[in-house]
Image: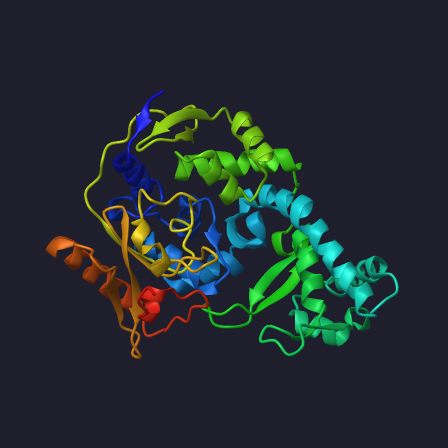
Length: 396
């Protein structure tokens, strides 16, 4: 069993995930492929992640890929997370959504509809509401959830939960109904009504948006394709890394690794990783590189075990208690800080305490900050998942 050292893992990351400037992707779809798919929980992450991995690609090019060419498509998938996927990977992601996410959402929505007196039979109410949405969208029109709720009496219904608590209140079930339909692959997020940094989707039938209904494989086939692409871009990774990213059981993860013929390798510092059988040759180191990545970037979030690119002492500065990563500054394959903007939209780097970047590292990151400032062209990004370092908070 050959050993893959941390330096080689960082070299693989730099080139395969299009972060080294000599290995940037040529276009939006290429940037998405470089990390399998793009996180889309925060709308701006899609555009910023592409900008970090390309040269000469603008936010408007990302919008065109999403809404005109439709080469990448937003879909709720692994870990019940929203991703922007290359179109040819959508069927595999839909297999996961249809088999793992949709049934659970059906159960929860039907339960709440019954429990809160919206209908005696919550499951029947949900099926009726879903059918009404599909009928309304049958002409190819794209409509936001609020419009669907206003026009369709079948979607009427709200529940009140956790009264008196900060996270409580009264919530309409309509958005959850369209999310369930989206998890089934019956409808999808179409045009965005707001600025690219905001998420204001209109919903449309999947077949209308893509021109044809995707052929969704069975769950095992979907998992295998997702694992194959993950190993191609993120490998080597441990069983726990793959399972975490996939959001699957250990049994499903092992079966997918076996299906793609994954081969065991030893990792520096102990542990076993996996690579594709045609990807076992050593990879040469590359020159030092700098990158500024957005909140929830696929590289930052790509592995469960992160010590080979993140100092454990800095974890709580850069990730929240749920493991959501904020903006990150990378130097030579390691996270060394975060980036923030001032009121004028100028980007600057905040170093992790005790980090010794040297003059070369600081200069390279300063150049990336200038590049990102110009790319944003005055647009200020707000983040739901802001880390302690981004907010200027010290560890307790």
